[in-house]
Figure 1 (cartoon, helix red, strand yellow):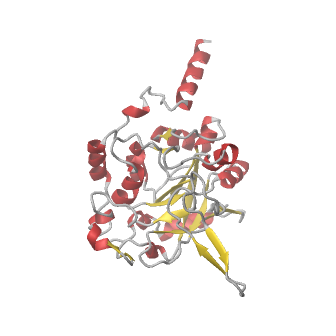
Figure 2 (tube, rainbow, N blue to C red):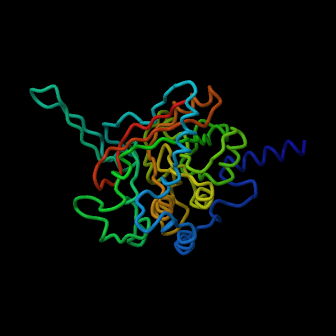
Figure 3 (cartoon, rainbow, N blue to C red):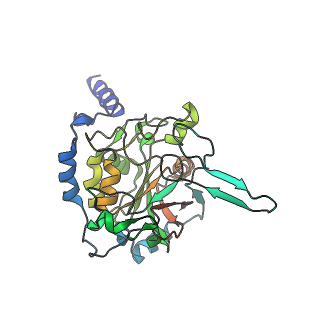
Length: 324
């Protein structure tokens, strides 16, 4: 009976956001701007691939890595990770997608402000700066222009990306339909998922964090995701660097909100993009992917990412595809 009570207590602790070690989320470093700055300089990849590098962690996707990814396409089944474009203004969609037909012609026009918490997109490495510097130490004044980024723009990914991806289905790990907003995901959660699923994060991989954001939206309606969302805690960044993750994605913005780091609004975005040189996939729809992965009992698969070739773009909407 005592053992059963202990199991129940540990399960309840994990579900509420506490860890098995008993450490409260608020005690995780970094908790303030000073600790954040120290972590930034500890993990940054500036100069790792040369002073003029434009790719960051994409350098970890080697020809051998792409060949490994191709070997995972065993059934040929594809799953789109793009969420249908939202055309109605909502708490999580300040800039609805606009689709208009041109008079007299069978043509149309698209207008989208894709950054934010509604539309599936990828962030370029010039999108986030820290202390007026981008990844690799380029100064804001040398990168940001009215015509776009002079360096680190999304056009550097014109050739497209093919690699292995790992789905981190944390709601499935915790036995819930979705994580409640404000739930932080820590390194031990990811390691527990690896043990449960059999998937293993390796150098050159994409990791996709499912929080169940779209499932929750379907059930309760939209909410201000930018102010209240489940996601990674900033303390996971050394783990992501150590594993050699090439790209990080999620069904929201990859980070817990509120951030739990006093004085820093987007610590995970800043550490990934500006420090590590890791592109981020935001607002991916991982619901169908989670269903297929569970059915096949395969949480590792090939992924293709093909941004628009916008010279100097800070990112791009696109249709990311998983191939089983």
